[in-house]
Image (tube, rainbow, N blue to C red; front, side, top):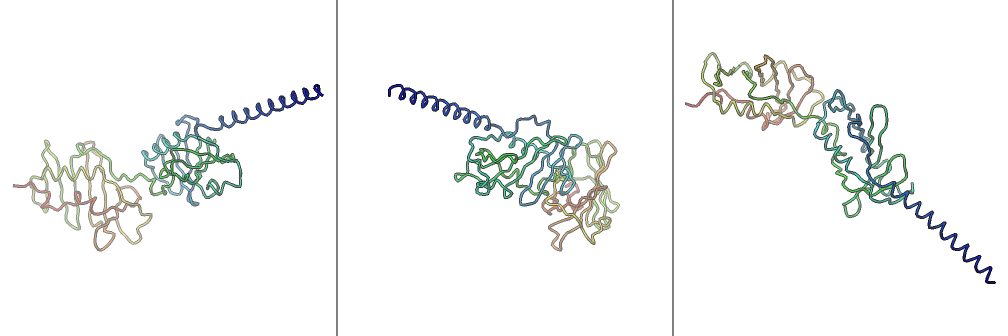
Length: 305
């Protein structure tokens, strides 16, 4: 009796030890699954694809800068891309919530979530689905697409992943140094006002009359133009002729280069304008408020006596 009891006790201890080791092994495996979403260098990334509500935006690194390659082809806002990477690289899996495929819809880590694919060349580096937020809004549910593991992740800034294609586009129209400008031409209907700088003094000519220009007004004009951004983009402008604009700005630089912008009023109120740069096809939509310092009248440009 004692012998059989001893055997049973020994067997129980053995089974308990096996159970403990298997549990420890499982826990160790779970810990290994936690940690950063991306464990690569940022320089390895050459493409990011974000799909939300069946709308896909593809960002691609081309010749050292980030561009949108789908659904439009345009330069991306470089700061937005850097912010996106900053958020992705900060994401860490803090807890494994479930490995049940049946619960993917519950946490919106199925096709209802935001699908993010990160690539380097032709190689996939990472792919994951951002689901809904936790009840206290401090965490987000996330699932790698090659796994059934649903994780709790802290720090997901959703606005980085919910931008539409037009929101990713670089809104810069002009970006130049005002000090490098030596001449300006403003055209409205048949009237042309020319301004030029000589020994840091601005002069102007309008309707054959030459006079000194208001330096403060010129400074405001160039400050507004040099950092001008669009409020929106227009794919087409049917029936509009940019060769006969309502207003035109042309700028000449010390280097001999020139740039120009043609403006057409989009509505009768003339509070919105369609704009197109010389030599480019992109059509911008700019509010009048952003153009008020540029669309100067002759009397506003003349030096005050």
